[in-house]
Length: 527
Image (tube, rainbow, N blue to C red; front, side, top):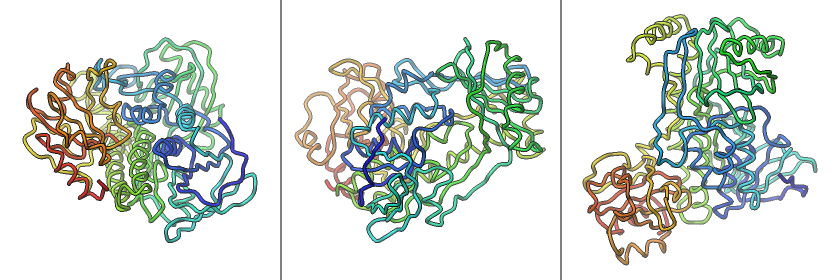
């Protein structure tokens, strides 16, 4: 990591406020697309403590666009499922969808500061990151924004064409614009503890409801790299949060639980914090030339690990759109679709998160009664057990997005309907196996399902800003691509347009690219 020592510039195309994982990933994506940007971060380095720890398959794909996937996977601990216990009896063993041909595991456990480091390193050659630089004031102007930043050189005013607020749940930018998150905040509080202890346990998501080690509490455990356990446990409603995080109150509870589950190796605490669930979002993530992403835009409960994962999805959605607008390849209105799509996604995540929260930390006696009945029944009834499943994070479909184009002709399924995340498929490439998701994250991409030489009109698509990937039947050895993209048989011909963020924009039977180009032009793209 290098620290800038020069004074802040007076003007930048894009100013990203917040150097957490969302801000650094967004900066790396923009830099990769040729957009100059500067990140200002109040802290002097990466975060401390584990914080967000579970990285979804979708997040791994996004980090792959900047080349940060390999260090993350090499360092992290992959997992596919978990177990839940009521008192001392197992009531659920769940497995997330996974298959040997997939590029990434469903989840990888890794501390947030590693994600920040890997994203920063991936884009460091082109990124200007200013640590120990605090935003003091934000003044929207016509055609830009003035931002006052305090750093080691004093107070500076930076004029930015675009500002992206990635400065967390206590966003200064949001406060400066007089905006408030709307929604629900739950009273239940969880203490979060990182402890170092060697273990031979499998990497799983573990949960205990009313365990003998801490009666009345709910406890979550995740293994992390560096021999670290992440432990989250619920405190009583009448406990003082200030007292609850004091080591003399935390360590006996941790010791009691580790002893109960048979983890008897020496251990020591590293980090202690406290958390309560929030289901909050802004109504719009675009306010003129100021955009919001990550926790500055929405706060989602930790249950189901949708917080950081949804923030990285914000970055993946916004980066290509902002680059297209700055470079004159799309109309300014394209950024409105960022807000429409990601507010929709936040509301979906909040709905799932609220259900999980009400089960993990029941807000009243009625919910507690229903939860106990469910757990009791789950001891003997397989049909009840799925109700305990925490519903892990998954990509959200943009079903009503204004960017969705048509789907013309007959299709055998809706897996790749416009607005859906483009399905993965393992192909036989010229240099060996190729995962289709490896081709996303750069340009508009036209998947051409055909056999033989392509028509000249298709080969000319790159001149219109659309890359082409021909998928011949012999390359689709497992039949995954044709099935998942809805083609009825190996002889069917089709075009599928995939956005740079890996979402389907439209699909057409046949090989005529004219309707595809017309759809792009109708959506405001320069073709």
